[in-house]
Length: 324
Image (cartoon, rainbow, N blue to C red; front, side, top):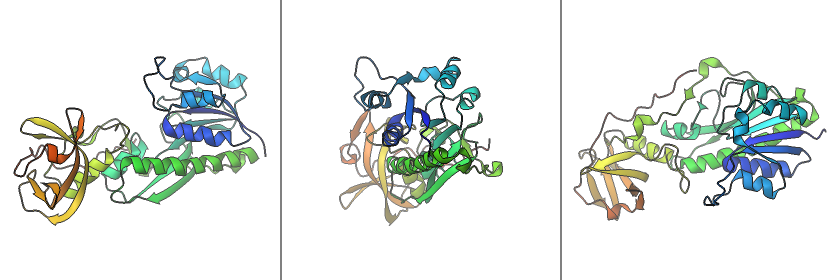
């Protein structure tokens, strides 16, 4: 088996876990490209940059991806493999072609159905019972390269986006390990299966219903929307579903199904067996946590029986993807 020279481009906890996995192999991490944390040290969240430096690896700022000089660095460093893990930048085609074996991306969704951004949130929002993670070879078109490895796993109807994202990272690290093992034997050992373009769905920066919650949707649709935005304790890329009560904007950050049939006006608030519930089109929803004016609050602090949320807009629309 051959020791590989690897360039890691990454962010977030997925990048950190990938680096720790690489540190336990015989492969050489030539450099880590990631966002440099603020010099004032105000951001105390663990960053890939800081972890890489603690491990003694060379760090290159993420902006380097946009610079023409990166390709010459890759060639001069004789990079065998580029691993892209939750990077925030689009990588130019000439950079992708600069590594001897190629560039591979860890995508937190099952391709080709969930290409693009926020795959976990979209899957939960659409009520998927199965999700997955994919390692694919990178090409200039986003998330369109041939698939090397993919795994699917069940999603429980109560799981948050944070929980599913964490599962994607855990499963994804295993797939990256398989990629490294295959590549170190021979690049020909890496399975590359072309994606079916007819099954491709691409998701961009759009947020369902512009982030507005409709109480006239079904209880399952509403709860799925809330779950899809729940990355606590980390920020949600979609924010949280917003609604209005007496002219004041309220965001729902956690909710669950009650299993109780509802024939009240959608948006009506009631208190039931120690819980605060809101009527949907078919079932009472247990509201567990709110965000008002930037403060996380218990529903008991904000809602009273008989309050009426504004219904707002059409029911939640599930057909938001485009084929690209």
